[in-house]
Length: 272
Image (cartoon, rainbow, N blue to C red; front, side, top):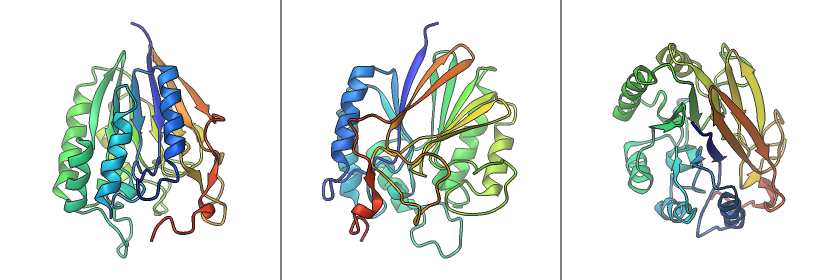
């Protein structure tokens, strides 16, 4: 069976009203056209402020439809609100925001056959939300786990599962909360997860735990200065290219010259 090629983009932050990062997305569309992957995956924060503005989601959808190839997305906190990792969260996920995202982008969790691999996308914003959709996602994961047939699995999730170690117990919005991370590990306990691909942190990094390589994708839009977020990986805009072949995956993190390396502090009125 021939190799299956995927381009991962993340944190595109698209908006017609505030189109600062649209040129970078347009440049990515040209890169996608040249690379001709089998699939493009956007790992969330697709829109600039979809949690508040329906128009941002609608515009982001139109931008993706111009890619000219098959694509899927999973939502980020800027698309439908955050998972409630603390009680006083300003903009948590709600039924209304989830329905609005689904109206524009369809399924917020999914399973895709990718040659000899299985790719699974999950909505990290549902973790700990208590919404009916959270139970639907856990049921989906249980079913998907039973249907992998021993094939290697690539998991796509907006937030990294952890910073350095899967047994970390600190709770902060950058990572999947420990309780949900443990439940996810149990749900996929019999699954041969070889890749965990995430976004959210606007910096790229690779680390390995067990058989799985964890890949943090860079944003295509902007980087966050150290005063907003510490440097853990590399703060450059870009994308990730994967080649799935047999039981292995080749990972290429690309910082293309066609993308402008914006700094978040250049845009003080980005979120109002």
